[in-house]
Each structure stands twice: as C-alpha cells, then as structure tokens.
Amino acid sequence: MQNFYKIDKLNFLTAGMPLATDKGGYPRAFEIIEEMGLDGMEVEFVHGVRMSDDTRKLLKNITKEKNLVLTAHGPFYINLNSKEEEKIEASVQRIIDTAKTASDFGGYSITYHAAFYMGKDKETVYEQVKQQTQKIVDILNNNKIKMWIRPETTGKSTQWGDYEEIIKLSKEFEQVLPCIDFSHIHARTAGEYNTYDEFCKILDRIGSELGDFALKNFHAHLAGIEYTAKGEKRHLILEKSDMNYKDLLKALKNFGVQGALVCESPNIETDAKILKDYYMSL
Image (cartoon, rainbow, N blue to C red; front, side, top):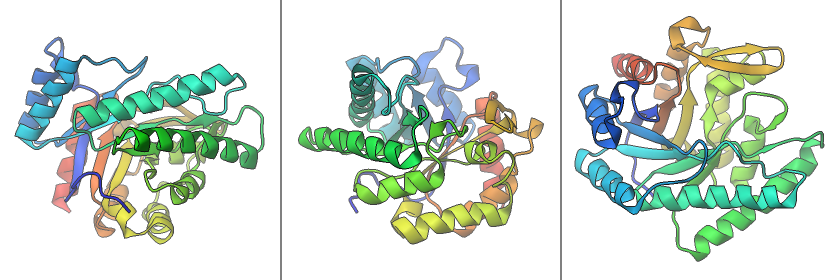
C-alpha cells in the first residue's frame, strides 16, 4: 500500500476550530490547539468546499511549523446513491474538491458520509458506491492528488456504511481506507459496540482484512452520542453519554493504532483534551 503521509503516533484532533477560537480564525485556532497540547484539527467543509489559496498556504505553513495533523470532512450533501444522476455527479465532485483542497494544505486524509440506501438492497448500493469510488480514485490519480479517501461509518441503518461495508470497499482500492466513527457504530446498533471486546473486534477485523498498515494509518471519530432504536440522534458531551471511551482508548493503545482520532463532541476541545489525557495516562 502507498504511504501518502508519515504518521508515528495516535494524534488527537478537534472537529473544526476549537470553540474558544471565537472570531480569531485559523491562526488563533492553532494557538489554542497548541496551548492545550492537542495534535491538530479536522477542517469541516459542511456546506461546500470553499477555501482561498491564501488560507490553503497559511494552513500548510502553520501545520508544518507546529508539526500538527490536519484532516478534512467533506460536505453533508453527498449521496453516491442518489436517484438523480446530477446529484451523484455533484457528490463525486465534492469528494474530489475535498481531497484536492486537503492535498493543497498538506492534509493527512479526508472523510465523508458516502450514501443512503434509498430503499435499495445492500448489494445494489454497494456496487453503486464502488462504481462512483472508482471514478473518484481515477480522477485523483490522473491529477496526481495523493490523499487517503475514507468513507465514514454511519449512525443510522438508512445510511450506507456499516463497518463491514467500508472494510469491503477499502479492499478494492489502494487509495481507500475506513474512517471508523465508534460513536456511530454504537448508535447504529442501538447500544452495542461499547465494550473493550467489541472495540477489539472492529480493530481485529480491520487488521486481518486490510493489514497492520490500516491500523498504523487510522482515521477515527469519537464523541458522546444519543441514540434511539433507529440509530443516531445527536452528539453529546462524553460525560453526558454512555460512550465507553476509556475502554476504546485502551483497545486503540493495545492494538498500537496510529493516525488521527477526531473528537466531535459539542464541547470539541474539552473532550479532545480529556481523550488525549486519558490515553497518555495508560
């Protein structure tokens, strides 16, 4: 497998700029990250991939200078299984734009919610996602954009992307690896996948199916989460949810996982710091 980016530890990132950034923009955001002893940030392209050339250069320079890790999250309006062809094409373009921008600012990898089932069976949707992923990978390769692209495990059963589907897709493409959102898996299964053994089961599956390389080049999300029988409802602060983050961090440590762990709790930087401090205490 190619190695697009050198990672030598598990890095703890905030999902977007820390709340304390206020109107300070990226320079202040990175100061806060550094002051708190965190390792970087996931740049959130919520409504579209818009970033000036100057900002791309600024991010590249700051992260190099401060030795921070950046990832990117693609826009929410992505559905590679839409009933409308133009929406599929727009989704493909948004993923490419996210990868290109992340490549420009020296990012480690990108993630996105790939598709909805739209009432179709799992196999049909898998083939559709695979077909569109092939297009994305071809365009990235033709443009010499070296960036991990990672469909994320999703929090509801109406969304394509349980961890087995994403591992299966990752086996098909050299440039694709999973983004494992442990909170989403916990919510999707209405409360399962919240013990040390269950976390190990996921990591073991990734290691055995994709190789140790995938554990050494990991991208994951974590937050407190509220869910119903239908899956994810909303993100919560860690301490206000039943998310068993301590056993998860033990599993990550015991498997020697390296890469990026992005905290998506509503109190972004506070919970990211709690996660890093606990991990470092193990």
